[in-house]
Amino acid sequence: MPTVSIVIPAYGGANLIGQTIDSVLAQTYGDFELIIVDDASPDETGTVVQSYSDPRIRYIRHATNQGANQAWLTGLRAAQGELIACLDQDDLFHPEKLAEHVKLHQERPSVGISYNARFEIVSPSARIYGIWPAPVSVTLADLVLGFPFAPSDMILRRDWALMDGLWMDNDVALGNETIVNGAEYVYCGRLWYAGCEFAGIPRALNYRRYHSGRTFRNLAERCASELRCQRLVLAHPQCPAEVQALQPQVLLNTYLSFANLAFAQGEFELGYTWLCDAATCDPAILRGDPAPIVHAITTRITPDEHHDLEAILQQVFAQLPPALAYLQPQRNWAIGRSHLLQGTRALMWEQTAKGSFHLERAKAYQAEIDESFANELAYSLLIYERELGAAAAETVLRRWQAALAPLGHQRLVRQMVGNYLANRAFQRFRAGDYAAVPGAVLQAMRADTRYLRNRGLFSIMARSLYTRPTQRAIPA
Image (cartoon, rainbow, N blue to C red; front, side, top):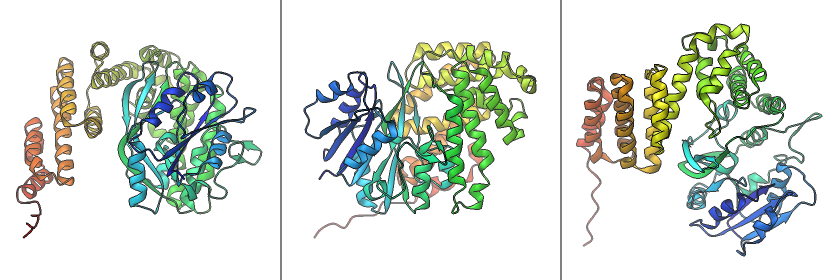
């Protein structure tokens, strides 16, 4: 029997599923089976799959279309492995994905679900535009506030994957209603209440693909479905009171996410409805300059190679309903911040021309590098360094410094650099790399003199200078 069974539900995936299969066959850990369940695809998905001769690949085809959840169930029931990996038909595995998860499950047999960080890629270019970090552990609150991992990030131990009552045919039924979106909240909620242990691997071990120009049908139904799933988890008799009290924040997050989806695909009236719903959950998001609701509009629209975010934001602010019309003066801030985000992201991923364009537009809108933005950059650079190394991160840092200098916010740019270097010093100390700590501390202090008063940095520098690695005994 194989150690790992990988299940791919497939429908209409002929153009990309070959890349997905190739990423599985490239694994450094080879004791697996790959089960592809073709849910009556109308294209050549089956032909592509059957062109592979690797004996570890198993192909199952539904006679009629039954939906992604039923395809997943078919694969799960056919799986023979002790561990079950989920993989969407257009996502990709990193070559060390299975090896890292198998190692975790072998070392920690009490873990029922493992998950990992991931790279975010956008089609059609398949370029990386970001890294989604994975928390080492999650709470029930994390699961309902904003799902911290995607299906392709996860691997389940077999006994938990086959737990009675976990999966239901035809998605997850609530009374007479069928859930068409958000079922992962219900599945993971049920696992949590049953006592399943979750554990994260803080490495990006797969690539989640976003399709440029993609639109979602029936957005209102999808939003309502997701909210029902979240409420089902919160209504469980075992749900702690402190988690139940988070329901307004859960609703707020969902309304804002769907509002941005609506704006991105031109459904402005629906988007405004959800903005107003979000404001009823927490009226404080309407106050301030910029107001938190404007910040959310600006930062939550997923990058798309077919989207002109400036044009979208122009439309959003031009058509604000009367209840939100007072936010119109914050339009330029929103557009400038959007260009700052796009420009620094493009420079991080070596898109120099695109980065320069967006930063020029940011300058035209008099974009501000405030403290929160400086801290966001420092945090994203730490995540980048963890995946691609210190030398690559330092290259990005120099690129950012040179590109942001013309915007005239030198103090905050130095603050961003100092924040990154200070946190890197703490990471080195926690990792036991004591020789690197003093230099990292001094770099942070040179970048931002505020750190000359930081007792924590002085403490780890002193402890590193006086800490010696354990000496190994020399054999006689």
